[in-house]
Image (cartoon, rainbow, N blue to C red; front, top):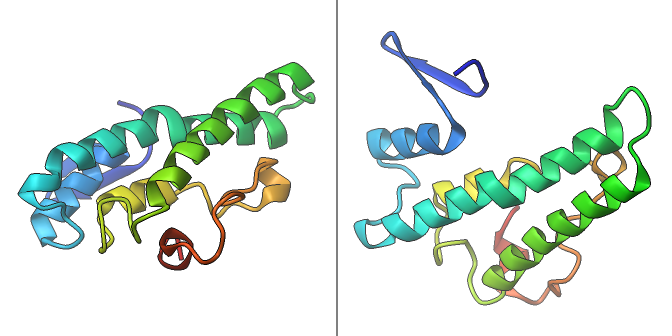
Length: 142
């Protein structure tokens, strides 16, 4: 597919982070969703790829890596989309430690990819609305 990430195992190349995470979880048995959680895991990984990380990445690129400054309206539009995605995840984490419950899964790893970039580079700050007393703040994404 001409993209990263790529995982090569025994001569077989895999791309797409969600597919790689699923393969690793199923192969190693670590951080895999339970059979009852598989649909919910897929739903959140697709949300991450299409909304959460996608919006964050576009804003980060426009904010930091363009040869000319991005138009303020473009940055404002992408910021609103990214913050809307953040709010969905923050609301979901308000009553649970991790995305699928009380233990980390590949969903948490999928969503965590971009949140560690510094705000100076992204122009965004993650976890701006959950009070520290809520479970998600203490367990995820640390």
